[in-house]
Amino acid sequence: MIGFVMRLRSRNHFSTRKNRTFLGAAQRRMDTKQRLAIIIAIFAVIYLATFARLVQYGLTDPIALASIGDSTTAVVSRPDIVDRNGQLLATDLRTMSLYAEPRRIIDADEAVEKLATVIPNLDWSDTHRKLRSGSAFQWLRRQLTPRQQSDILALGIPGIGFRPENRRFYPGGPTASHIIGHVNVDNQGLAGMERYIDQQGLADLRAAGLTGDVPLEPVKLSIDLRVQHIVRDVAARAMKDYQAEAAGAVILDMETGEILAMASVPDYDPNQPSRTLADGSVDKEYEKGWFNRISNATFEMGSTFKSFTLAMGLDAGKITVNSVVDASRPIRMGGFTIKDFKGRNRPLSILEVFQYSSNIGTAAVADMVGVEGHQEFLTRLGLLSKMETEMPGVATPTQPRAWKKINSVTISFGHGVATTPLQTAVAAASLINGGNLIAPTFLPRSRDEAQSIARRVVKEKTSADMRYLFNWNGTKGSGRHAQVAGFNVGGKTGTADKVINGRYASNINFNAFVAGFPMDKPRYIVLSIIDAPQTGENGGRTAASTAAPMIKDIIGRAGPLLGVQPQFGKDGSLILADY
Image (cartoon, rainbow, N blue to C red; front, side):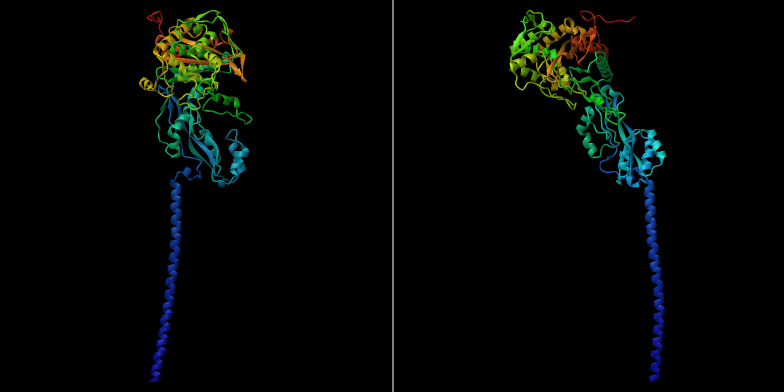
């Protein structure tokens, strides 16, 4: 019995060991299969992820993969700028700019050498420094030509790429440069109406990323491109012919305040606002053309101010057009002697004071009104405060800190107060348009809109008298040099001694002429300036020989384009006929 039990236990033990050995081998085989399956799954996931990433790279625009920092924004669009007739003044062109990813550059020296064969005036040291910087992104050259882009692509330089940008293009070049202004390489407005557009919200839209390829409504200006070309051409030729430092002119619609043309020379090409010399330095003489002498500079406007002095006397009731003042002898005041350029040495009527441009007669009228009244009147006309208009960078007039009698006397004939030529034209318009001061604008404005902002500065009777004076001087006085047959031009010259280093130079003039036409029903004001002319018509250097002929040329060419129909005969009933 004991032996039987021992045999059963021995058999069970053997059976258990046999089962355990069998089960252990099976488990090991199963674990091996599981590990193998996990490894296969891991590699499958890796390969699938790699494949998906390659597909993504293949379908994505390569430009979006460049490491571009916050300083490089997306393609920025600007609205077109057009003139009052829809003629294009400024637009965007799509260009390509060259960038580098220095971390991917293999040989910086070789890259610079290759790029120099395509890009003119490449700064080798600066480009080499950028390529060796190890940074993620560096601009190398903005706004390439299509040919340059093609040639650089053919070089096959790794780590080099292109990014689309908008480049501002001005079809007229310098024709209206001081009005339109220009932009920087990032298409941001720096001057003129380009800067004004940014100030009206475009800069905010750009910051919000809303100025990509979205088409923007064109911005229409008040200027007439045809007339603008004439005004600039006349100013440029006058500066050359009269050997002057500068010249300019402006045409203003006195019923609406719209500026139809404005030019100041020397000027510049907004397509190339800066110019580099052969030695790599910036051409400072070229950059002087940025200076707009019509709205961004102040001058003593000379005898054109006599228009305001006589209007002041008329409006205050101190004189009439038939009044007579004593101009028989010079005035001595405060150590100064005030005399006439070509004195008549006799009493003069107000008509003659205006016709002969009498300093003595004008000073007498200012004395009748008084110092405080004189200052108040010029302030009322906007001649002593900064002008409000869309154009950025408008200059602020200068005047004496404290007005005394001697200041009032000299200011009466245009010395002692410096204001912008544009302000002078705007104030002159108010004298002959019925007495309403209308703020100037470079944007279209209707007559109804103009009337809603107009401010009466002189009486209608005063304005009628000033039209008479302007017309009289246009036919009897210095205005004859600006007269255009059939257009009935009236106006006033202004010849001022130029201030050089704080002193008046007796042999250097700043000349101006302010004119209205047609004087039977005035519509337009034209003002011309010429700075330091060396000669003029018939050898003269005064406004009558320089600034007035400019007005004649401008009106003769631009008048018909502005819709003014010339009239001939005393009653205007005769017209020219061509058979």
